[in-house]
Length: 491
Image 1 (tube, rainbow, N blue to C red):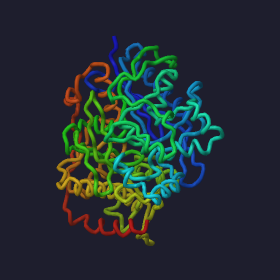
Image 2: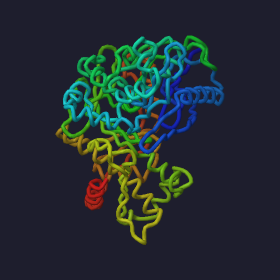
Image 3: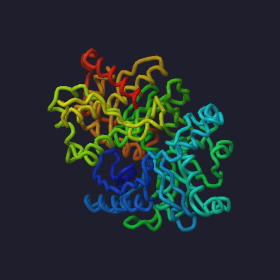
Image 4: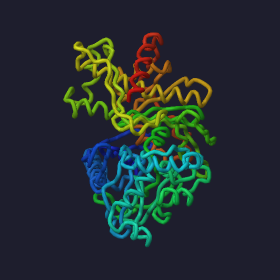
């Protein structure tokens, strides 16, 4: 009996495989990390084959730990780090170079040239995105321009481009499928979200050959079937797909216009569902596709903080202030406040609403009395303040205040961070009992793809609350907000 959906959550630092049943309960979860590659300051790369191996290892381990056989898997859902860019040989599935990660700033000069040439208004109107090295289009052009013979190979149709969802489906199907969904396509700067298709004009502007791009299919659809995957039988349908943040919005069951979630992972991502209406932000946010189910497109407003959980990793790995990421909450609780220390975690530039790709991290307010506990608390505050900037911009676009923010991702388990967030937002923060909502969204979409559910609303009863954080006195955080703005100006 096919009892489970396999959700593959391919993230920036590792790949998680989860087995999820019809009631959307998680029966098993395994995460496998892979190596981060930093060729030079501001550059971040991944080995696509290492990503694929991490997925295979995660799948094998979750099956072994749960005793579930591959024959019990009814379908596969995929969610992924979105803008990370891979180009490979169609025949051999061999990458032409390491993937360029969403965090990477190596194409900042290309983006500056596009802005200087006056293309920003047109690109934003077509894509809902500002011109920024964050997105995939300039990354793809860079790979073609800096890999010997790649332009010629692309011209004769020998190469394929994809974000990580596309790469995984290609590997899962032994090259039979070259596909993506609109949520991932909308992050490339090559997809017209109004026309709902790849744009020849944008391909021309960014110098990316049209024949390189995958077919775009709905977020809940049969993309292909497994073939030759170690540990899995042939013929399992890959049936749901969405970029990680849109998938989390789906997994949080934010189905009504105006409902919102924030995911705290390597970065932090705040998305608000706007239904079938495409809202153009006037405050530095992105307009993006949330998902496509059937013929219906749903859109969202999005703000992105490039560094959130990664700031905690930096305290651990770069400064050695903590042994493991979870230690930060206990350390931060040993002080009543940050002692005047403010940390702007702009370690790879500032995202929304600032969009300053040259910004760098700032720690201000240090004194002889500053301890590692103060820095730990300032790090949590810096993450929460970054998210507060996003919500303030979102509320200005909407002309109203958000009543509730649903949260997920690894750092949402940090109660102190969530309380700081509620205090700064002056908005109730609600955490579900399952914080793996990114994978849950992929499972919901795959469930629709294979017919377990007819609509997203059919899965709404699966969402259950774990904890609620109500805001405290706004006066208590007023000074912190002022100090934050001064520090951001220095970044």
